[in-house]
Length: 471
Image (cartoon, rainbow, N blue to C red; front, side):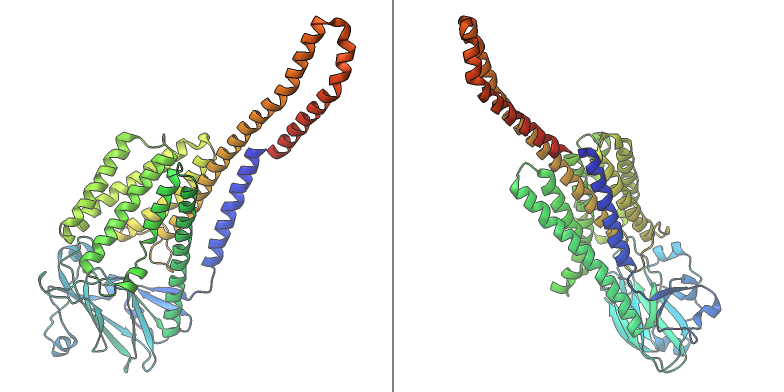
């Protein structure tokens, strides 16, 4: 009965988590339309901006000028020459670019344009006016000022033809190339609503992680032997540090070089503490011949943060593929251990979801597409992290509940041994008396039968009570 009750509790718990997350996902959100690479796709004069965001992600819509940093005045003077047809691989090998995009919009209204976080320098011009950029691009590593901020820009076109010019430079990052950015354009209200939705999702994720941190720290404080709870709380805290909103709020002028090192340190520590937790919670799950070399690679990558940013970010490209293989290995090990109990089932479900979302992010960042798309939040892995935390929180709770049940059972048998020892001792004493004095058997039985019956009734009540608790 206890096992069946635990299974029902697990199913109900997972259904509640799924229902809550689906309810969050179904909150009102602007419609998203992706603009293709066709020439007619540039004309948005008849587009409905009241509840729609138009995403420009196709590189074919942009004109690219490698090894040049042109301004609107340069294009007006006609000194830029013809754009170069650039492949994706070219963006990785060229350090600075100018990209130009021409759109047709209804003039006189306010538009908002949002971009994902830029891990390189960029300078932006819209309709000839320079907007607040990210860092400062230049033609050499010594002159460039890198930056990493997510921006929302507002502009009011005076003519139907809108020209967007972006200068980019990347001398510091080994992964992000100088390709044209993905831009979302819409009405100011719609873009702000989309931004508020993203902030809401990040707040939900951050709240879940911090709540889990406090819960598991309190569990460890109450019982110092539960080291898995301490490791899990530290892991959740490191996960919460992936959201750099608080970092930018307290340190708005933080150096990009320090910012990117903190970002990669957090990613490496997440992987390291996950392995430590799995070792503590599932000692026989991982093979040392696989897990130990992977941990050694993690430590080496942590030390690589002391070298140039271009070196360790480039090294992370290859390490990400090793991490994908290691995630697949962990999921496979959980799948082969499902018969070991409910905790392994929860571990498999949580790790499978986290693995799918994490691999999706890794593939997306390496330009290989994505397995799962969440346009309302910047990182799909955060969704998998919350689900993973919930699964392992329940797994830890089940472990502690089983330990408490075993302790209660041991205490019960200890109590029963004491309760049964008294009547057995009395009966043994009476038998010895009867053996020595057979003529007193009837008298002795009359004296002790009431006491023995009371003790038997007490034992039977205790057994009935225990049987009721187990059902």
